[in-house]
Amino acid sequence: MRELNDMLEPGMLVRHAGQPDWGLGQVQSNVNGKVTVNFEHQGKVVIDGARVELIPVYDS
Image (tube, rainbow, N blue to C red; front, side, top):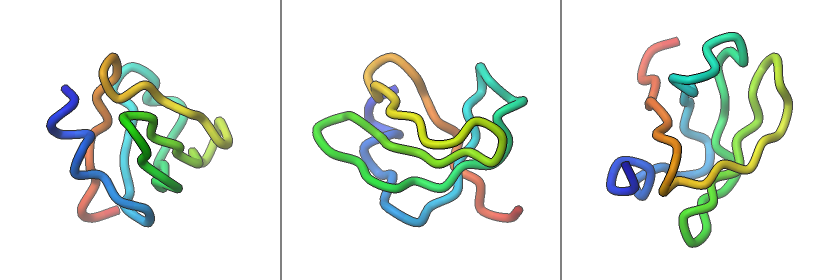
């Protein structure tokens, strides 16, 4: 999981596979495996990249 999350950069769009109702999220930061994402329907969430895989979205 961590390898995919390591490539996430601020501005990238992602989805949380385990929480599809959160909607589309935009990466705010990615520091030491902690990824901060602002989701449409959940707001700002800090995610442990070692435990949760985020799915990059290339066309929204």
